[in-house]
Amino acid sequence: MKIRLIYPYWQKLARQTEFHLPPYGPVSFAATVPDDVEIEFIDDNLETWDYETDADIVALSIMLTCQIPKAMEIAAEYRKRGVPVMCGGIAAMLHADEVAPQVDSIFLGEAEGRTEKVLEDFRKGKMKRVYDYMGQLPDINLVGHARRDILNRDNYNYRGVQMLDLISASRGCKFNCFPCCTSYLGGRQFRPRPIDTVISELDAIQNNRVFMVDNSLSQDKEWLIDLFTEMIPLKKKWVSHPVMYDEKVMDLAAQAGCWYVYQAIFDTSDVIRDRIKMLKDHGIGIEGTILLGTDDHDEDYIKRLVDFLLEMELDIAEFTIMTPFPHTPLRAKLEKEKRILHNDWSKYTTDQVVYQPKEMSVESLQNMYDYCWDTFYAENGHQVHMGELFKQVIRKEMDDGTYRRYDPKRKTGFSAAQKAS
Ligand code: B12
Ligand code: SF4
Image 1 (tube, helix red, strand yellow):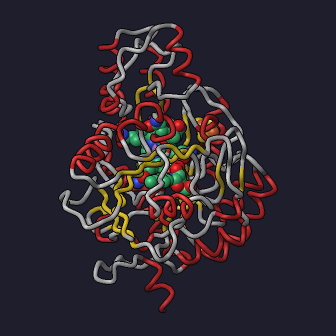
Image 2 (tube, rainbow, N blue to C red; image 1 turned 120 degrees about the horizontal axis):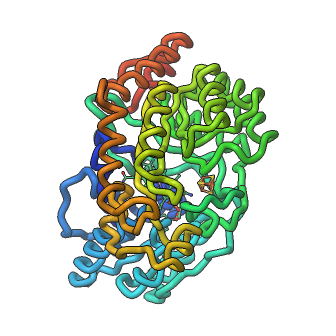
């Protein structure tokens, strides 16, 4: 049996340098597929491909709302050709009602321990239209090593610099922030993976640089202390969402190779100032993620925020426009207030205004988005800032002897050479 697994195209932020990380949902799903099933993976963002296939079934892995239009286009084309289509992933769960009628089978929930049964049903010609496991989270011990071997490594480098490999040490998030759908997906349950499994998966990754895509590394202090302590000998360099603001945790994170974190910056308060300072004091870089258009934002507020970011000398800033994604507290609020302008998912890219802001017109918020990128990057462009961040990691790697130039012929990244030496 053969599956053609496709990760549909999504539009990148208009003002950001375009780079492509290897996708994580598809390789995690692939890890749940029995060994006797062949998987052919296509990243629609990077590959030229055609619809001809000898696969028995097409599987779509959809992460973002803005992938939905292309995913449904692909589904329609295959169904026209008589090839059955199944789909899963975060956006499939968030858009289940809309997606289900357009595919042969929709899978809702996490796939660990479940894929074998789905494929067995398919083999018997009895695949269900819906496999609904929402609210039934699988045992976290079932999460195995992601199947990164299905990726074409050549695709994931930027001007010869290999992109990070993705890994998650936990699932779920106990918080419920207003723009976020994670509580809908995971029921506000924090589910850490066993540390020895995470360490063995990290060790097996050839790349020395990884992105820990955990929703938040700020949920369980004892587990974080244990995790980071165990990570130190691996000498990996990693990027993540916020790390707990605790002196001991932060110190261990730095020792464990924390390179930079994504830090949401929503105001100019001392809390934010202190967080930035703490990260800098530990030699950890900061990519500020700045959501524009909350109800307390007007033009002056946003201008002050940008001045603050410049004053704080952030390494890099990613400005996005607040977007009411399905199954978020934000969407519920804006729907109630009748402020959502449309559901054209191709524009839910976080660089376009799709709702009525409170203190600004749609046009002025859109203009402020450009203002932020232009002003923050007036002196040095986004690529220069990215380059500086890469210099930071190279310095760290030179200090502990893990720096190796990426050799495209080996297709294996940095630490293959490191392990050989
Ligand atoms: C990693 C990540 C990214 C990476 C993606 C890297 C890449 N190459 O894919 C990066 C950093 C690029 C990214 C960017 C964005 N992201 Co993001 N991201 C995530 C994050 C943290 C993890 C996703 C993940 O890998 N999860 C783990 C995997 C294992 O889970 P999974 O995909 O669900 O897969 C499981 C099942 O679904 C199933 N499965 C998967 N595929 C299939 C297929 C089939 C056929 C079957 C049966 C099963 C199946 O099997 C897997 C194992 O159980 C999520 C948060 C989260 N909780 O997941 C947000 C999340 C997906 N991102 C989100 C957002 C909003 C964004 C941005 C749009 C905005 C922003 N600035 O953050 C940007 C994109 C901006 C742009 N247009 O350029 C939202 C999605 C909202 C939406 N409705 O679109 C999320 C949910 C976070 C949130 N705050 O709500 N993101
Ligand atoms: S924004 Fe981050 S911390 Fe807040 S609920 Fe979502 S995943 Fe958790």
